[in-house]
Image (cartoon, rainbow, N blue to C red; front, side, top):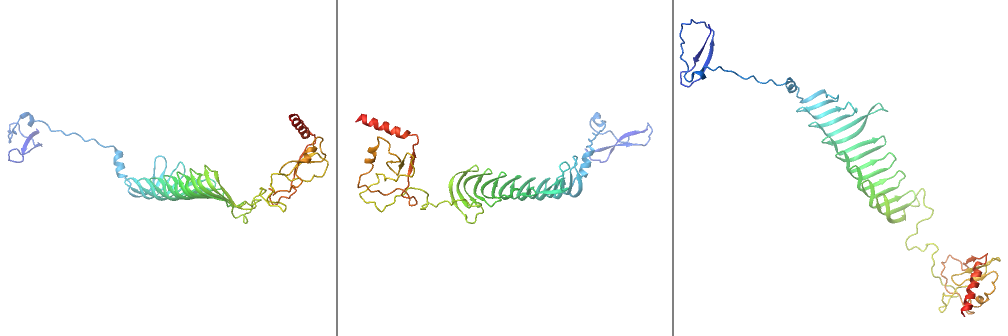
Length: 371
């Protein structure tokens, strides 16, 4: 028969007692050698029970054992991406290589807490060459291009310079596929600030840019024609400025005529005063100088800076004009023609249908009626 007894381990009052299960078989007439513990009878006879602890999922234990620190080989993600390199606290940290399965891109370089940070190279597969082609090589921060780096847009088009947040910002040089080159300041992936654009044919622009366009003061060297334009630009359009010859003798395709300098005497057929041999101080240029009749029998009038002189046949009723053209002692005054213009310069107005003669006759008739 099995009995449950109280075994007192200490004689001091209030000391804990241990409930022991004794497997000895005793006769029913043997009394209990130990007295009942003091206190309420119900509390002393209550059974002792313990709550079972909840067991954690198995994956937590496996993940705890699989925490990645240090160098690991080919850790695959669920989507098929693969990483080979160093880890810290289960994050990519240090040197490593990431391969994206969907795009086929490869990144080799520095990592910091799961992001590309430091110096690294990004490559994409090239279907024509059958291998990966380098796209960007430079510095990264927080998984974005930041700092100095080189971006390849094509076989003959690339940018080298400063980056900020995956955009060209700061100083940089851009080589375009058409042979042009831009060197200067960038902002938000566009030329902005001071910069120079050099074209394939040698022409270049030096000045200010805004939002990728010429804006502000600048100079454009037309070296193929030997000219220089300097002025103000608004959205790639020259609004005002000056154009001068610049290296015209060395230009491959110079302009047909040079640009005259300011203050030069060679300014084309501009009228300038010129003294004549027969001019006197008393004579004035208010009277016109007669011109010789041109050859031929065509009716018309020849003007020489003043009153017209009749040529050809004299129309009827106009004889009085001949008598009051000039006084007998009249001498020609100073000419207003340039030096290169001959003294016999004439302007002839032809009147083959006699319309002008008829108008003059009507004018003469009106004058006679008024008199």
